[in-house]
Length: 298
Length: 306
Image (tube, rainbow over all chains, first blue to last red; front, top):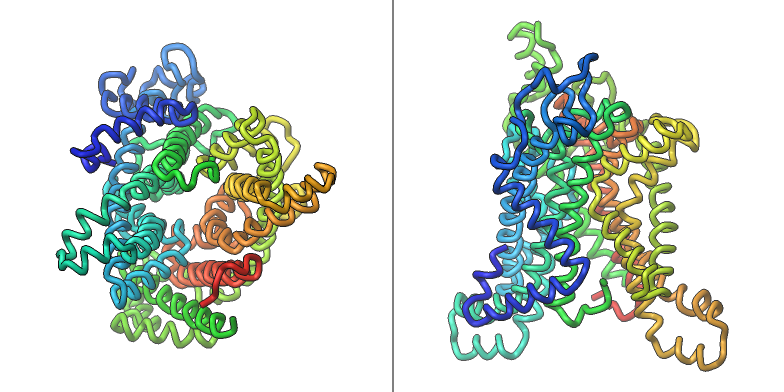
């Protein structure tokens, strides 16, 4: 989320206030730290990877041809093909974050646009858009995502698009409800009465009030996205090997989980950590940005 | 209330109609040729063409769709392309296993979630509360396949207490139920906690305290019955989560339910089966939401049903 940009210039200080509020809460600070470490790993992946993540090394297998356990030259061990697990995980961080940001970015923009349009214009626009949202809500999300991924040959961007198509619905519901109640408030009615254009009302008067919810649900949504990507990749219809993703590393090695548990549980732990980090930060943001909800969720 | 019920029923039917259409169009776009799948790799082009003709796959999209819809309304979901069976029979054979798993997951998540929520609320802002809430955050952040494989590793591989997968006895049911209910336990514990805290601050609780009732009596007789209702009302919505969850959980544990059926059908592009499971799942979700909406005003009369 580019909340830094959207809150500027008047409330640049507010952005700093929010960040310092976040850092003062232990859970949120932990989440921020995890996110920063992961972003660092993703950005500098080529520099910090100890081995070539695609190289099927003969040294990476034991005498029986099995994967090496953690420790020694290969810090986190190797996978079934003798590739360095640590390097694959670091490169996999990129996959998770790229999909998390792209898929969720699309979902946020789409969901917020649909919600605002329906809430602001009401009438037929709302009826059609919200009935369509209801329809999407009734779809078994994972089944829909699997079918979509199977139709389009899964590439990184297709997986991101599929996840976005499944995930925008929640956001549009939340924003719709909020926009509708805002649209009935006096300060918006006044703008309408003095003949301000719809675009002006939307941009200058509605959007600033919706920003908190968009930031909160946008952050929480990244966690959903990360989990959905991992699940799709685990089922083999997400990110395709040899491109590493935490989910497909587990997919490739799951049959050996009893003899080589590190190949399943280390990537599993990373998925939990990243999803947890965004959940913790999102939850804290909700507390900070919406004081009326304080204490109900913490 | 009855007007509201009728309107909601009509809405639900329309949503299901919409879902048949969207699913049908999506599956129509699948690049794999079903006729080729049925005939096998070695079949001649002529055989494939014949099968296409028999199945009516050469007809325009809308003709195929309305034919499907007409059959569906008569309870006919078509035949599986790859298994020599009616889709309805395949689903009916698998549904009991999935229902058993889901009911047992609901029990698991309620026991876990409500207990954690009550304890956390009573120990609000103390170490126990913080620890439990971190647990609930982890449970909503953990993918089901990781939980499932972890449980298998600990309880089946390391300790050998429980079977490594499959179906049949109570022992087979334990790990899949915990895996499927784990996510919900996290949500329920947070909802129960905030619901308890809300009720604890109500005037009638203060009155009960002023009357000199024991703490245990107040908590069990006055607070919990009120706090639990809004949480119970959410069970209907869980069905949606479960319909996604069973695909993963059943595939990890080799549980012979409709999730596994769907997953196998997707891998082999068995379109009538995918269509059938999607419709059954969507119907369950719509019914679940409907029940949740109808129960809510009964529990909290402040919610209007206009």
